[in-house]
Image 1 (tube, protein in one colour):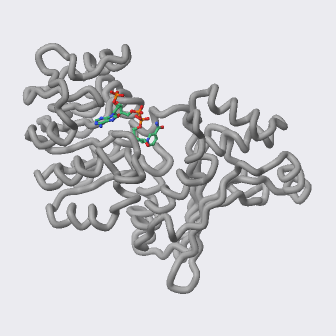
Image 2 (cartoon, protein in one colour):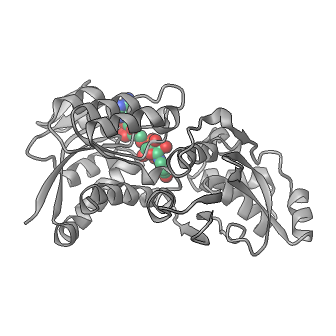
Length: 345
Ligand SMILES: NC(=O)c1ccc[n+]([C@@H]2O[C@H](COP(=O)([O-])OP(=O)(O)OC[C@H]3O[C@@H](n4cnc5c(N)ncnc54)[C@H](OP(=O)(O)O)[C@@H]3O)[C@@H](O)[C@H]2O)c1
């Protein structure tokens, strides 16, 4: 017996579009392995929305977006000007997938969509960090009150199961220290500076040419993106109500090849490390360039890698590293969450 799971999707960019692509390719395997069939009943991008309670054609939407057309222009099902929030409220669904752009000022449009979906009794899967960074406790409380689940394993280093290891697999053990390489762009830059002797400016240009750094790289290179991910880990894994004010943040912009050479002379490698370190009953939280011994698991990460190390009281030291080029692994993490809403309950 295959169970139909109706879902809505807000945001049809790299993450949303690749999610549809994975679903098109994996739907049969998912039905066979988990007894689930995901049916897309609503989708929204910046042009408007598309709705069909009987199920939208996911391959057609993927192809429509690949040629940069808005879902509002889809024949028969498109609704020009319908907002994502109106779409979420208009449909009957089991799950909202929220993959809208990250907005760290207001959390919108994702935040209102997540709240509306929980209100309507939908589970929520998020790729967008914004609402979690701004309103973690509120959203978790709302999800608990609605007896719905809010999953976000793709928000901290994409496919790397950073959140899942911390929340699920360390159950019952205490965390003494978390060390993370949570930002791919800065790890790409630092790895190329170290391995190829490129200057910071040259390595940044390389990251921009590879499509992994924005024209304005501030969020990445000044450490804010890694800090936002650390905030999510602090709130979810460490259960410490945390905002950006609690994190000391320093980026990599000022690093020179001389700094790297000095570290190398001491047998170390400089990485942008997100760190949560237990201090008595609390944790000290920081993101800063850190010289790590060459054999540290995070020192060994390559230019397409991100990683995490959990130092625990009873479970030893657990490290995980992902090597993933491009955003597809995050879409796969969204799918992992969608399946686990049902497979794990
Ligand atoms: N890319 C990654 O590797 C990665 C990794 C982890 C997390 N994330 C997070 O995942 C989210 C999506 O990332 P992405 O790379 O897919 O971004 P993206 O390529 O920029 O796509 C954003 C999508 O959101 C749509 N959108 C913009 N404003 C909207 C609005 N007001 N209402 C509804 N839809 C709106 C855009 O519409 P149009 O198509 O019409 O422009 C586009 O489809 C972001 O929050 C990002 O931080 C991304």
